[in-house]
Amino acid sequence: YNGSARPVTAATTPPGLATSITYNGSSFAPTNAGSYPVLATVSDANYEGSATNTLTISKASTTISTPPSASPIRAGQSLASSFLSGGTASVAGAFAFSSPGAVPELGTSPQAVTFTPADFANYLTASTFASVTVGGVENPTGDADGDGVPNLLEHALAEFPSPSTGPSSAT
Image 1: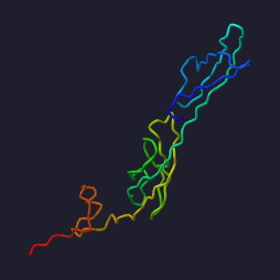
Image 2: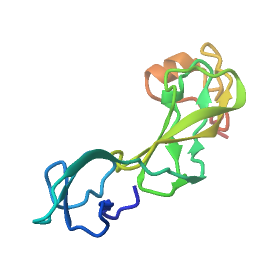
Image 3: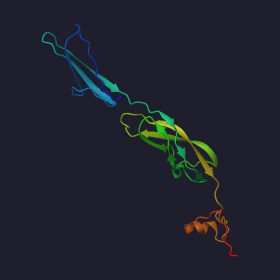
Image 4: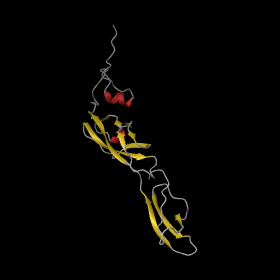
């Protein structure tokens, strides 16, 4: 696939006879990737004959020039909890984790990412890797911000604990 029509030519014996060529019944040469039955028919009052074959237009390759970045996740979370951003490919499309249900171990590791082109009919998917950082689990019974309310309760109340803020004290 290159975005242009892909006409075929026919050779005749004797050389140079006029021919008509159809692609799956149309006189227009196809542009998109796929397989097309081709029929060439001699168009000459003194000769007759025809031939058939198949024209195959392969999908074009997709090139990834910059892999996407992945947001960090916490231990026990699957890759579906990480968000991919950025990344550059030769055509429009989207990046996604190849195995979104995978649960990576603590630390930073490369995870397989698949790029799916918007024009999937004419372009191949491509693969790359994104580094995913998996952090430790917060102690659910601890009190990260020192306000006297356990982390688990703060999460339930949607008041996420922050170790950077401590209890306020009046002076």
